[in-house]
Length: 446
Ligand SMILES: C[S@@+](CC[C@H](N)C(=O)[O-])C[C@H]1O[C@@H](n2cnc3c(N)ncnc32)[C@H](O)[C@@H]1O
Image (tube, rainbow, N blue to C red; front, side, top):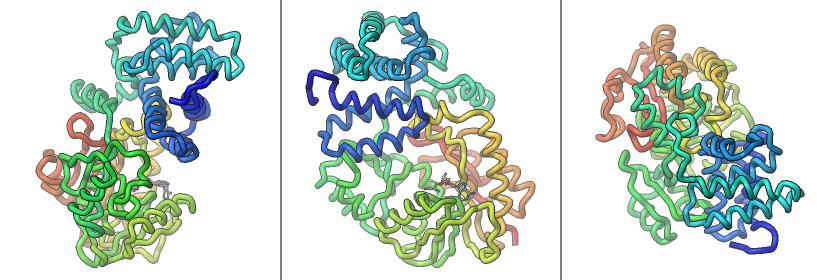
């Protein structure tokens, strides 16, 4: 680690990144990626340290704040934003990173406070952190909100919908370390070629237990430096999300419309499955989103896919009854991907769920008519919440001219749920080693 009189560069960066996320509402994955891209000169281990402390502090924020509040007269909410951020990132290191001596964490925190012109508060920072370090074995929370750092309203919502053990397992799973989940573009390269290339780049690879087309990667620095990624042989996509392509099960020559498709994960998978035949059109709301899709199309090199800006709420008569498959992977609350994007649990509100459910219905009311009679509609979300999932499926069956299509066996032998014969599944973290995801498949009645 780069040592200097002031705080280390890495800790200054962590402070800046966390300030942007926790005080100004930035998305953790976006802010972190931007910072790491800008500081590519940092060594791999320092970049890994930054990522771990930023992600960990956000994941455990409610637990960390409860610990600080127990040991400080001034409560976290009343503290100066810079000071509370220094304390939060330091408490994460004290509680969760054994290899760093607590005394070093305290010293660095004091240096950070001084560097950010809070000389007068260095005694306070030092005092709070030394107390926490001394008493750390005593912080045992039994209530789920502080134990798993989950807002009460989300716990209550899930407890109304699932058995308590399922909810607890889910929250435990969200806090587990996750390698990067990638899907292999098997029309671009064979699994053998991909594995060989990853090995040459010294990437640690595990087979994904849930699907033959998916791998779990770790031990790399940036993805852009991994040959298999640069060549477009792999795409970052959770295995649960790749099941949308499996449920769609496109046939050679199919015409597919993905109405809310950036950055293109599901569409690229379908383009891969179509093996150069058919046509996939990916739409999203803004030019910036479509640029992301186009980057991915360029990188993967598929020629049977294109992207365009289109508001899914706006009817497009040119697509009426034209699509063999419509993918409606709609905007949702994202409660299933809290493990990857932990800031979601603090940002989403109960009202958001209701607004999103309305938006999903509004979009579905337009896009269903693009499916040709006998064609398929796939409705999916990356959330865990009946209002956006099972209730929407029921609404589709009651309101639109669709019937369920069985997805039994569609995701390989490891995924078995009773509901699959009725054309839907709610994947739950903790039950399966993947994100929380909802997929439902329908056929338009002739
Ligand atoms: C869940 S994400 C899609 C992820 C994508 N299917 C994938 O696999 O990469 C939902 C997308 O819907 C887009 N979106 C939201 N409102 C929209 C609208 N009215 N029309 C088109 N796209 C919209 C968002 O910009 C976002 O990219």
